[in-house]
Length: 419
Image (cartoon, rainbow, N blue to C red; front, side, top):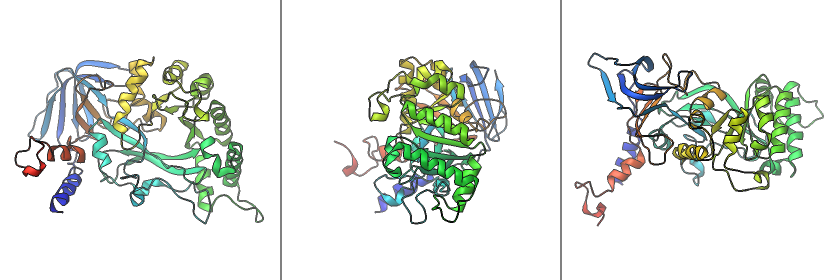
């Protein structure tokens, strides 16, 4: 028990990060700025008080409190987007009390758009350091639809382990498609019927003789989103995506498609409507009747048509695999710079947090990753990670357990040494 306690204490100690006080000078990097300046060769980046203070060549730093990192030409990118996840909301999926990203059916109403998962966010989740040491600095906390059309609300979270990690505006999650039809009488047409009724209730309270779908707070929540709020629609089928575009325009919301296995079929319509797509670049097989048109060059086709894309779908426990999935999109026709943008600048712009994440620019918060080589290659490692100006310790519960049980630790009892 003592050994287990020590391991757990060490795991939480990883999250006790220092304040962003020390200057950090990254010298001689290949800087992928993700701005109009493009890629800057042999460039220094100076971080001061949590922000990017200067960028240029042969910069200097003085004073006793600073860190100098020699990049020697290696790639420096903005921190990567971990996708839509439940990091900080889910610890072990099979343990109910550690899962807070979904609301089960309750007696008051089957629809609760006012449900907000961010109040359950735990910055001490072991998933936070596991994800960030792989180069991911932010994620969108998503509310999972369980027994309702509406999943609820979420927000962006910085993976710095801070209690005040949330930033940006709330995002509403709605599930539209065959997998959700069970909550609407078994027909996806019923989903649109219920959504229309819910939006009608948001604009005016239902009459006394009408059974409402929403509570008073739910109506107020939907009314706020109807005033240009961002709504993520989970949908795959091309015809359903077209319905989302029509209804988003009708309801006055900013729509974002999540999934979009058949989005390539309606790429020009998506581009014209300025509706971005969060997609899994490995979606290839017809995993359902909604995704019969899945193909590996989905991202390339959407990008070529002018659709803003971002990558998601690796899951909360495996978010670190997302950059490898982006590499597969490059293999199937997506330009390398576009794939990197889909992990950095694009998701930040889609959700209105480009002042916080997604680029390397003077005056912006320092969210940086120094890579051993091309970040989209499977064998590449994140060597240093800076989140909100903090030089992140490259340790997690996984690395601690690795070090605890490897033969290279001669101080360990013999029982823990592999033969």
